[in-house]
Length: 444
Image 1 (cartoon, rainbow, N blue to C red):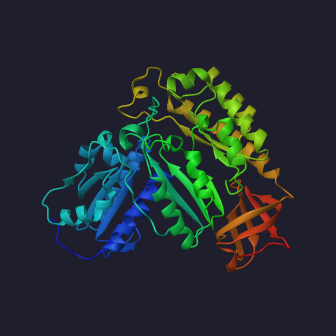
Image 2: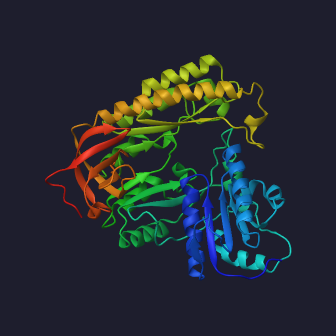
């Protein structure tokens, strides 16, 4: 049993934007109950580690953070939540210092569970069977550390069951946030001064399938019509969402950013089938061509996995050629990591680490080249930039992003932060566009 002490809490978050949203929501619960939020490296009374389990590295980092918290303050309550906690509760409970394992549901009650852990002489395991959870857990947020862009979680769970992915088992079935709760959240954040909203979830394209008569496009329309909103940006989405009707509609919504992150994973049809992805390269190509037909300068970014079991050199080479053909504005390359409990972990012909590393380097190099070419195509143009922060590289400069998610830096003053400003893009340095404020900058 740990003695009752003060009321400071430190968080460490691993993984995706969904995890970041969940962490922010839990932080607000603690603040509402009289706790002070402190840095993770500080001595705190409570440590909350919001874990990720997409890769083995995520698991390892989660364990490292748990042990670090225990070293910082052995008397602190250590609460472990998130995907790794959901899928490996027994493993986590064996780590010294852990007092609470929560999982990916019931985060609204985390403060009560932490207080309960103080009075227990053994760790508490409150992980539920996530496959039995049917309702979206509404966790309303009133503010973010970033005062310009808000990440808005609108959906939970996934029913795709890609052969390499543990997430459906960690997050459960598809649950969608009710439209009235989404718009209420957006209105509150507009009131707090936010300009841009990133719609995110575990599988955003599935939004509404459990609500009846609602889908992602309808939700976007509702948000787009709210007074005071400047930008709507979509998180990673399934390519097949982008039908002719969808693209035609969003083209006419001027606040929807011209930036789509379409997960690819592989540019080879045989590999895609083994991955249990729901599209072919021909369909992906058609979708990209459709988007560019309506939005010629659109930014199309993607994720690509290398070293999937059975990936031959010929299959990898065809992925490289497909990536060149699509000509992405940016790619995120990662190496396949076997996840226990997924079909791919049992596949034969696992690829060696040295081959994964070699293929990863080749695609990363290609991605950097494509990104530079895309950025250069904007030189000399005027673009609206939403400024977010002071530059870490150059004193007196400020940085923000265009609707295409191009990072821009300009010389200026503190008043730029939080403003949408028209900027002339004049130079490129280290993948950051350098700009000058135009005469019609309209700061504010």
